[in-house]
Length: 182
Image (tube, rainbow, N blue to C red):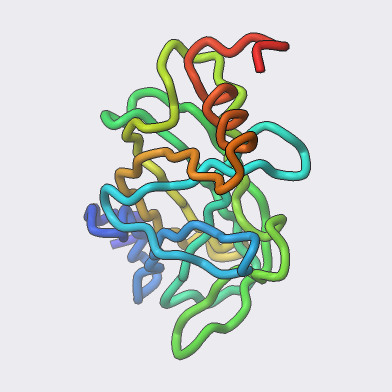
């Protein structure tokens, strides 16, 4: 049964079941202000936020169940709805912490412990904000290579409370961004 993959689309995606219990991933957006994970359900808004490095990103993490290792690779990806076009990706190795029975989460004290998917400035020919995309998070245990993937449709959003910050997000995330436009 080694290498068998199962596919589902209700928050848990492809999972490697070769070594017993499947690695299950619940997709979540990291809220830097509250240092919490907010679950992402199909069709939910996903905020584009201004990170310290500039531009606009999505901070993507998850709750992992049936994990046996605390050192994992998080690979966050933003895709077209048909999955054919990759708009942004970030992979990083992180340490997971216990968060209840049989659940592990990234260390939420820093945004560096979740996937930082750079989305804007946007040089694509379509606006990113206000449109639907697939958000995906693949979690892979480094030693065993067991993995799990969560994937949901999200609507990218510029919902900053400050009008100037919201205008910058919409300008940088609009189609065909050019340096100096905003």
